[in-house]
Image 1 (cartoon, rainbow, N blue to C red):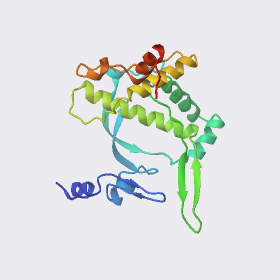
Image 2 (cartoon, rainbow, N blue to C red):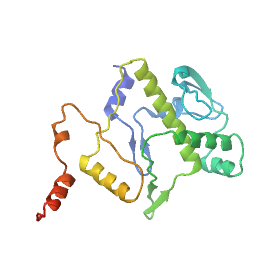
Image 3 (tube, rainbow, N blue to C red):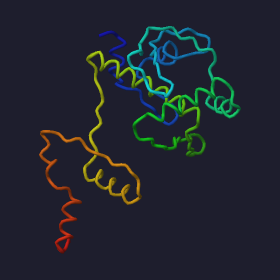
Image 4 (tube, rainbow, N blue to C red):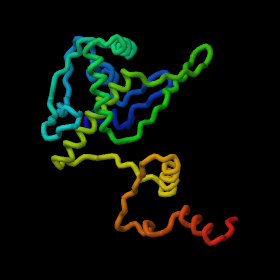
Length: 219
């Protein structure tokens, strides 16, 4: 192990505090060599992603390259938001492309505010909502991450993936019942596992429904 490996393992991950960040890597790397700066070339790995006119990914044409990135200008989110409102290019077209990609993305869209704690003479709490610029950048970042994962899987490269556990069956049944009452044509179907003995057992909702149908009392 190099001294960099030892340093990284000692911290495991970056730690985000209300007013500062404790990076996993030394500051000279995290805030300098590994940070994109205006008019400064940086060694990187870039993902080349191809889409058709409908925004569907053409995975067979996607590639991962060693690259050198030189940022022309460092722009704030507020600046890009204003540029989008003014229909300034290329920001307006980039937002439109991000919205097209979102139409094909499968996943929960959780709109939550970013709560920040301000420390000083008097403690205060502020909230920051998502904007067009933050949503656009997030869309492109997710697209890059997903493409890297898909290429690694396609080429059968050994890699660690994070698999989220399946949702609770009772919660899924309750969700499906709610959307059905609301007249929404959507249903979550849990995959059936061969070694899942509980798959054939009745759910709590089924047992309660059967009990009510037989005229029984539930206490």
